[in-house]
Amino acid sequence: RYCNFKCSFCILSAEGRKYATEPAEALRKQLCGTGPKRILNFNDNNFYGNDRASFQERVACVRERWEAGQYGSWGALVTGDFFSDPRNLRLVKESGCSALFSGVESFDVNWTASQNKKQNGLRDQVSMIRECLESGVVFLYGLMLDLSTRTIADVRRELDMVLSCSD
Image 1: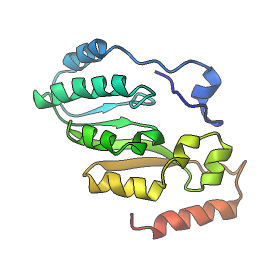
Image 2: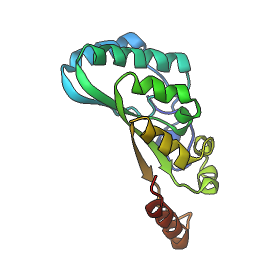
Image 3: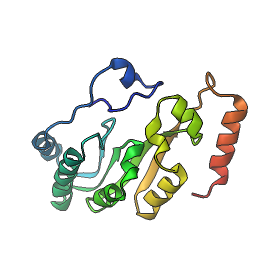
Image 4: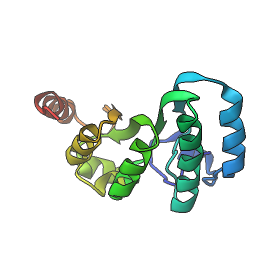
């Protein structure tokens, strides 16, 4: 629940609640209760979190149900720091993950830094997207087209970059 970052534009930061994970056993019970599905998607704000051991436990629970045939694949929302460790992408792919959503927000690292979204500056985002796609995991993302902090020219440049980049 909640998030371990404090991005300026995010409602989760405004709520001021500390990021918290549920015990792996609670997730296991929820997964067993969902019944069979073609695709399972975790709409948690940050499936990755700030505790690698807890993340690995959650993925192990998901993998257990995936290997049992409860669902064909799964997806989740992760923050940009997830991609800082290449083991994370391999771990989720080997556990049946087919799609990840991450808030890119902008390919302009100066703008994301100004919004306190420092986790997006840890890796080159185009390379991160390419690695995800090459692993066989669909990468989904959102952009913030905030005209209160950016000019129309900035937004146009960014959209032109996105549309011209085959990755």
